[in-house]
Image (cartoon, rainbow, N blue to C red; front, side, top):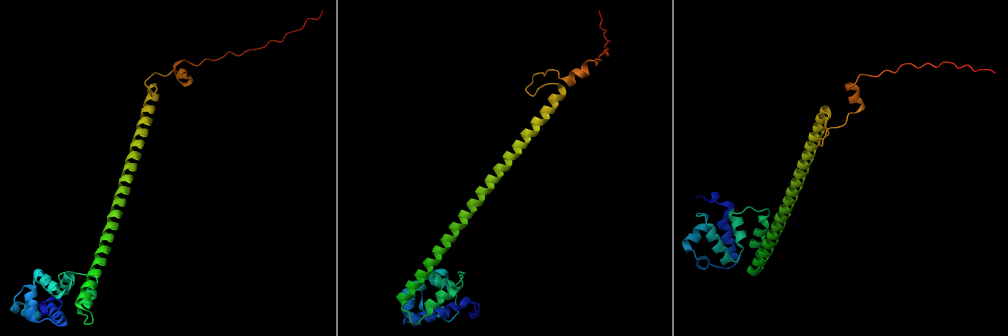
Length: 198
């Protein structure tokens, strides 16, 4: 694999970290549990280290594993420059670099956890609101169906002369008018009465 294919020049980063720590190539290889020639090839950009080897090198260099993974391109982060700046700062001791990296990683994990909890709470709220809306729509549809059914039954019963409770209703004036012929009254005449005079 050509050096240009290696992401973010992880070999140069490891070499710089080793030199800043004032550790020889042989010492780092022993501390990381890798062979001296293999580490030399990684530093020169001829070999790409695995995630496991990167973790071992990070431990030996006292750099956080996420910082090493970010540099190697195995992790995507919003601010890889922060971890790289901490790891590459020659004015910081290894203990200070490790502490700063751990604090930074802790804050990022905490923020990610809080964001996930907020997203989960928002999803729960949305689901509850959707369930409430569905229940209200179902109740409205059932009420409308019951009302329409009662109105239809009432109209049917009225046409048949039956109350909605199933009993026959008494004839009303309109019903009686349909059943009996109309009655006409005879005109009344008044006759004048004459008073008798004595």
